[in-house]
Image (cartoon, rainbow, N blue to C red; front, side, top):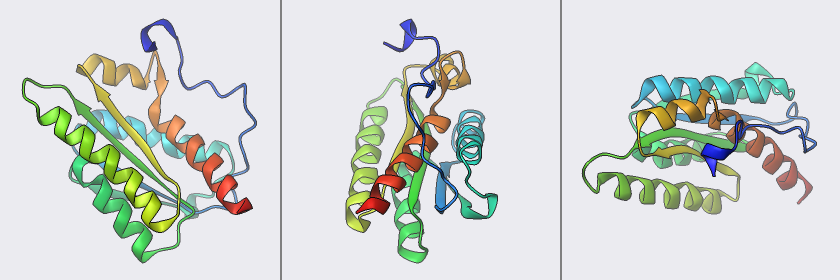
Length: 162
């Protein structure tokens, strides 16, 4: 449970692969920019910390989390990336909109990865409130963007073996 774990972005227990041979796309939602900007910074920092070259990281902005799937599809259709990281934030409101968006994005991200046989990483916060999002975007529970970056590196390294 997130509330009982101080930092969910601790990777001290694993050997993270060298990111230097890989090219990454980061598709980031503009909606909830305070949160997604922090996720983006965490992702870029995580990639670079493990050897990714700045020239091998391309950031693609899309309007909202729903459009992450289309952005990932366009990135893989038009360029050769080893992995795509999708970053967004959907905060629960008073309508079922939250459920529809979260479900569509999760399925869409998975489907794009399967379509192109490339790692497409789900770095989308789905929180009950703004404070939970802040806590997971560089706050007391770490940065989901960094976690998504580490996942992308690890999956790109696995994919390279096959």
